[in-house]
Image 1 (cartoon, rainbow, N blue to C red):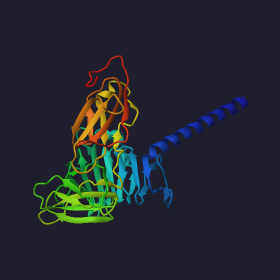
Image 2: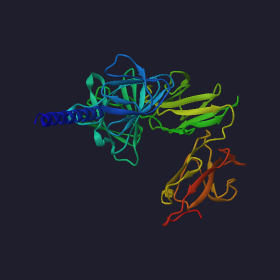
Image 3: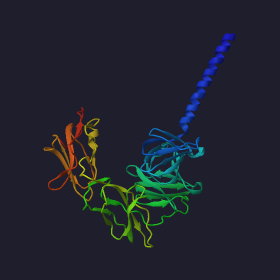
Image 4: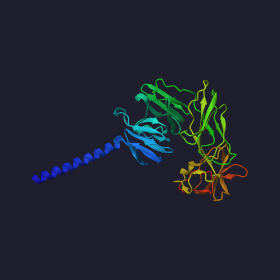
Length: 404
């Protein structure tokens, strides 16, 4: 009987220990509010249990109260508990937390300095909302409004507060009984909540050209026209060009009257540009989203982005929507996408010409293809060194196709 009692007690002890370990693991998982999806350059975190900054890499997890900072030229993409994500630009500091227990899951982000981009899908709040904490503990909840595709926004710390601006989609803001909606191009200072927050100026203009991440060959006579969409009521525009995305090393900061500016690069390298509208009182509003220009010493010849070389679609059905994308060459050129059966692209089965930097094809018949993009000049200028291969496999039931 004593032996049986001893074994029973030991079994209960092991069961209790196992349950304790399981509960501890569950608590540890529940404490995670964000995960580092990508990191580049000098990035550090200061844990709630530590008084020192320490470096981290992609895959690191964050718990309530952890700080994250980026150094010069650094970048961090953080996946949030609620399903959205934020991307920290260089020289940015944030604190990630979780809402109070009564508010459920989700993530609370406090932007101490710098600037961060955010992306929210319509179903991003499956585990709770994304909340911005402003001054005096004011909390503004962000929800993606009805829109095709994700909502993209930016939060920037300024000497006057914390600006929230939307570049794509619609963002619904709520704080207690207050509720506001921001559409693309709109912005708001949310550092003091929503009750008295009003835009301090006009919306920001949409950039037109050069395209996103344009690559342009350097020459001493190079002139790059920067253009943006004109805004009704704007009395002018404030144009800034810098050597960094934080605009701390500016080479141009001037006011113009027309929606355009001729930029003369002083040397090869990377430049970022943005523009803000000036109101009737002479005050600039929120700057538009920055675009990068890469001025290369030699004419770039490897500018294709997607699909990658050798890409094979999962099946013919997936080929109904293949996105072909490439980098901009600057200015406002017309591009010519060529899809052919041969590697030299001499016998095209499909040609698309236009000004956008991407084309979505409605479908390709099963088979092996090669593709490339040209600037539609005379003669055409290729944006590639060799054509990329694309494979659409055979299936038992193939959809209607545009190329055979």
